[in-house]
Length: 171
Image (cartoon, one colour):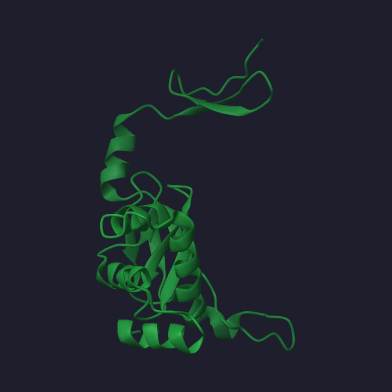
């Protein structure tokens, strides 16, 4: 979607096109990678020091609602990422460094005909993400001993990199 079209749609839905909203639209449309709301807020306050992070979230929600922006969860950062939507697409997300690569095709579209959905179910949209490790992170992981998982005092799992055997605390 073009930025002017997105701003028109926001205006039609009763939203004002404030300088902050216009700047956030331009930031997203020109971004070279998907960004988190805190990253967008940090960039936006350079122009508008008074803008609140809540305002950024509200603008993002309105842009997602009109399909101008896609949102997906990135477990490597524990945050949602936002990306200007020129077309619906999916991502490979590195759990090590958080890099994101857009997939050129949708494997779900190809498999949709063979899916056994409930009778009368109408698909409106779907999400598909692939999580793993990029070449750089795979290389770094193979050079280190594997992290072991052990139970802490309260039965919680804790990671340790000592011997890779995975033992429980004896305390």
